[in-house]
Length: 450
Ligand SMILES: C[S@@+](CC[C@H](N)C(=O)[O-])C[C@H]1O[C@@H](n2cnc3c(N)ncnc32)[C@H](O)[C@@H]1O
Image (cartoon, rainbow, N blue to C red; front, side, top):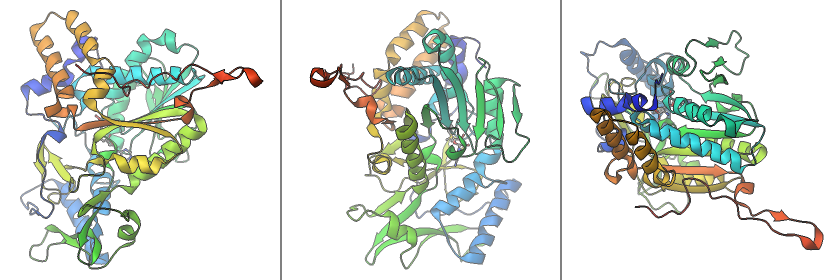
């Protein structure tokens, strides 16, 4: 847990200075058809059992889709990568913005409060985070909630985390509640863990969004959508064909990509008629989450902020693996490395349709600068005399906003209730007139950047 803002800023700035930790987006991309042998010298049982599980499955029912491969490797309830690992940070496989600087979470905390205020300060506020990793983002946001508790007074605030990994849920519980959380005793309980945060708010953990209680919510998803399974399709002379994962006939314990000779249900359903690219990745699981979000926001009010590395329907082969902060062949040692694909924001917007209003995506640099990252950095620097801490704060800032680092590759999209952007009408009958323009959406307004 944090002791003070300045010390807290060190958590990953420290790792950036001392180690080789690099954000996942900073590394180059693998070629799709590259395969890599499973290392028989690898003694780690979970990866080996994952490979065995996958090859048995393929032997029994034939090649599996990339989506099925990704789902098994990442979230298989016994040996999935996310299910049994704490993979974040300098000693892990990758590092993320909330781990790099406390300022990131603080500005998102301000964003949550500003959207709650713009919605007319509803009586309840549910903070819902998808895939909270180590809990660092939620922890920074809750510190802001504590500091601005007079602003939030009158609202019943609760915290809801959607997390597939029992291992990470423990790490999050420790970070956010200390020892103040318990695992549910009944399988029927929609929350599998619950407790009280260090600043006294009720907090619960769920496996899916459908389990989260209804109510006005601010939803956050940082580096969550990129971890959801994608289907991959290749355009051929005969039309679109799905890329599958198969056993390499030339080597035992080796996987390879193959193209199916005929269309699949997925290739028929998921490719747009006007698609111009030769290779496409589609994430229907991401579409389902966005549908839930859009429905909930339309029915109960609230907003969602989705932040991830991504594109607007222009990129092709972005599927890649990370292990120890280095690119890793996606088919090698399944379960030993993180798998990820860039988020197609145009697809998410399309799925959200007219149910909600969408703004963005805007780059992380634009979002954070509009949210006041420069001012926040100056305040922290003013209160800090230690030269190495100052250097780390500046380095973390640079990592977040520098266009060559995370500034341009990471994008922010928000889903809002239509009411949020509408100009209200005031008065009655003939005296009705347009009310004041809606407040700008923080982070997304058109501010000029220095
Ligand atoms: C790349 S990590 C990002 C962690 C954190 N948001 C951050 O930025 O530091 C992905 C997170 O999503 C969780 N996750 C992955 N797939 C999930 C799924 N299908 N349902 C719920 N959580 C999932 C992982 O366990 C992990 O907490």
